[in-house]
Each structure stands twice: as C-alpha cells, then as structure tokens.
Amino acid sequence: RNPVEDCVVCSAECSAAHPWCARNGYTSRWYHLSCGEHFCNECFDHYYRSHKDGYETFSSWKRVWTSNGKSEPSLKAFMADQELPYWVQCTKADCGKWRQLSKDTHLSATLASSYRCGMKLNSSKVEGSDACSQPEDLEVLTLQKCAPHVIVRGLVRVRCVQELDRVLYFMSRKGLINTGALQIKWPLLPESQHNKVLVIGAGAAGLAAARQLQNFGMQVVVLEARERIGGRVWDDASLGVTVGCGAQIVNGCVNNPIALMCEQVSACSWDHNECFAQFSGDHTLLTDGYSSVLHKLAQELDIRLSTVQHVDYSGEGVTVTSRCGSRWSAQKVLVTVPLALLQKNIIGFSPPLPDRKLKAIHSLGAGVIEKVALQFPTRFWDSKIQGADYFGHIPPCPEKRGLFSVFYDMCPQGDECVLMTVVTGEALSLLRDLQDSQVVDLCMSVLRELFQEQEVPDPLRFLVTRWSRDPWAQMSYSFVKTGGSGEAYDIIAEDVQGKLFFAGEATNRHFPQTVTGAYLSGVREASKIAAL
Image 1: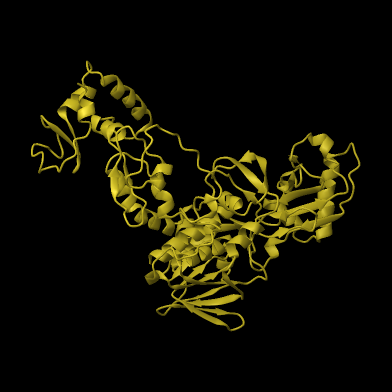
Image 2 (image 1 turned 90 degrees about the vertical axis):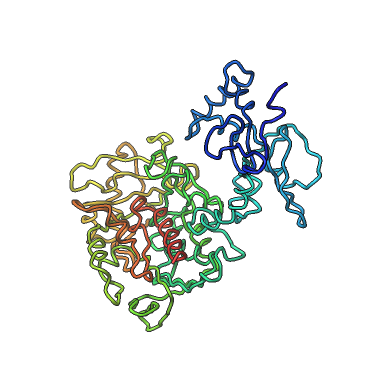
C-alpha cells in the first residue's frame, strides 16, 4: 500500500477531528499545514526516511529548492509545494464556490479563468504560453485578469485571490502597475480621496503625476509657462530627422517605465553601443523623440498655459497666482519646475520654504548641455567610421574639453545626412558670446580637422540649442557639487505641511539627470498625494 495515495493531505478541522494535531510542532500522528490541511506520520515517513520510495523525490526537490528558494527545504514546504491539491473558483456569476481539484489535475491560467462546477477536466499537464507584451501593456490590470495567474497549491490560493484587490490597490497607488499612458475608464481610488490638485510644470514629471492623479479620480489642473508641453524635452524635425534639443535617450531599457510607454505608443528607436548604470540593457535613442510619449501622457489632461508667479500655502488649502493675475485654489500643489528656477526664486512661496529645503536646493549644481545639429548634402563620414553610429576625438587642450568631442549619426540606417554633437563643461564659456552661425563655423573646423583627407561640405541647415538662455529652464541637468551630498535630492523631494509637493529629476536621488528619473518622481509624488 502506498500511504501517499491514501493520505497525501488529511483535510480536517485542526482541533475538532484531530485533537492530537499540534499547530506549531511535531506529534506522533499529524503535521499541521493549515486549519484545513494536515498530513499524517505515514506520509512523513514515506518521503523523509531514506529507505522509503518517496525519499529520492523529496531529495531531488530539495536540491532545486535550495538553489532557488529563500527558505529551508523542509518536508512541510515540500508537501505544500508538490502534494497539496489545487483549488479553483467557479466562474458562473450565480455560483463562485471554491472546488478542490483531484491530485492528478494541474491548474493552469486557462482552466482557472474558465472553470465551472461539474465540468469534465483533463488531467494532463499543459504548459501555458508566455505572456505577450501586447495588448496587456495597453490595458488596466484588474482582479479578473490577475486571479487566473495565481497558481499555487492548497487553500492558500483561496486567500491569495481574496487579497488580490488589496494588492492591486496598493500597487496602483504606488504607481507600480496601471501607470503610464493608459486610458483609465474608472477611478482607481475611492471617491473619498478625490481631491483637487494643481501641478506646476508640464514636463515629464508634471505630466506623469497629473496622469496618475487623474487616473486615481482626482481633479487635476496643469499650469505651464511655455507655449508647449515637455519642459526640457523638446523635439525638432527641421533637419529632416527628429533631433532632441533636450533629452532623446532612454537610459537602459530593462524595467524602465519609459521603455514600457514607448511600447504603448509604438515609438521607434535604435540601440546605442554604450550602457548606463541606472537600468540594465543598452540605452536607446528614440528616432522620433520623446514627444509621442509625452503627448500621450498629456491626452485628456486639463493643461493651461499660464506663468505661475506665487504660491500661498499659509491657509487650509493652497492658492496659486499667475503673472496675469489669474488665481487657482486646491487642496495640494505639486511643483515640478527645474532646479535653476527654484534657486533663482522665479516662483515666490508664502510662507517661505523651510531653511532645510532651501539649503538643499542651493547645494546642488545646475548643469548645462548644448547641442549642435548639422544637415549635410552627403554622408561624407560613412567611409571612415565603417558603420559606426558615432565617432569622436580627443580635444587638443583642456579649455576645449567637452567641445564637440563626440558626433552622433542621427540616421545611421537611413538616407538623411545629419550629425549631432554636444558642448559641455568649461567649453560652454567659449560659446556664450558667439552667434549660432559662429558656433557652427567652430564645429565645422573640428569636422574638417577629423576628415582632412576629403572635402567636407558646408551644412545645408543647422540647429543650436540655448538652454542656458531659456527663461523656463536655465539648465539641462542637476548634479552634486564638490563637497555636496546626494541627500539633497531627498530633502528637495520632501513635502511641506502635506500641501506642497516637489517632483523633477532634481528630486530623484537614484535616477537624476534623466527623463526616467523625472517621470518616476512624478509617479512617486502622485502616490504621496493620494496617501494623504
């Protein structure tokens, strides 16, 4: 007689039917797994004793568990992982009862989503297909979609499915799921939390927060000083290809929410050959820029073009005043303007911001990167760089370090003839007093020095950015000054009195200087606002 066939799991009420069962220890007869699940001493011996038939099965399982699991490979864990039956809920609207499957029936997501009481089951095990990134990435994750994929043996599956609503609520509020450019048809949070929120700035952080808050069911108004959305994300197509005057690179594609949104809007991209530390995987240049992603985020948001001058949070709520005298009131306000504008007090606050926050704001640096893009009649560089999508050189002197050091081919697989280069660091001072045409002449002298053996044509058209002169940016990225600390990012991100919140790349200690960091900071603050 095989004892496992007779008693793999002895289901009974713990203290009623089997008074000798111990909830937290060994007895001579029963081992407790849950209030309705036990296994007997004969089953224990069958797997645990080296001379029994089940010992090799248990030993093989232990080797796998030790390699992948984080808990001890005990016999209780084995029974729960391998021998407990599956439980499945009837999907009929007027039923919903939980039923225990036979020991030889394997549960799959397909079976769980279609099971009805009394249906004939196939006991053969069928491997499910891999999840597809489409169209799930475009849909809201719900209890009905998740429950069939909870595949675990025993009564614990019943509890897991019952707790899914709370898990989904928590993960949605934290921005871990149901985020990005999704169109939500119903609020993700209860009506008691539907406050009015003002978001200052329609860059990546502001749009991310506004979209998330609106999905939560809150009333959101976004105030933007420019005549466009995007902030330091600004795409230009005047040269025949899209040139990101600001950000254009997705820094690492694995687990990057920006990469997910690119799938949601089908954004085109091509891989670069470098890697960034923040996210694993190659970083990618978006050939059509970030605009499609940000415009998708901005859909159906209430965005008003108005320059904010003052924020008064001295009362119960917050009042925001624009330069033209318009006023808005809300329970909470999220400030997403660039660090340089906070440093220069472009927006006034009443009462003034706490000294701790002001100190942190001024402890970080506001760096600048300028771009120069050139359109040529021919791809004169192709023969020399042999298929590479960028090339560079070593500056001749320290003063020119950061001056046109690297040139990027903006259309390596196409026919367009556009190169883009950057100016950073101390080299920016060389451009400060030059006209755009003079900057181009300086750039062309570098190219002609690199390609001396051939004739380098004059550019047909060009583009030179001036972020340092942009009144609503005055910077490109934040950085920690010499002697400073990354803690400043966290301090800037702290809310003030639960009414005034801050987002942007300069508030993200882990992913500063990136669109991803700005986006995540917006989602983070939306979660904080929803929690208060």
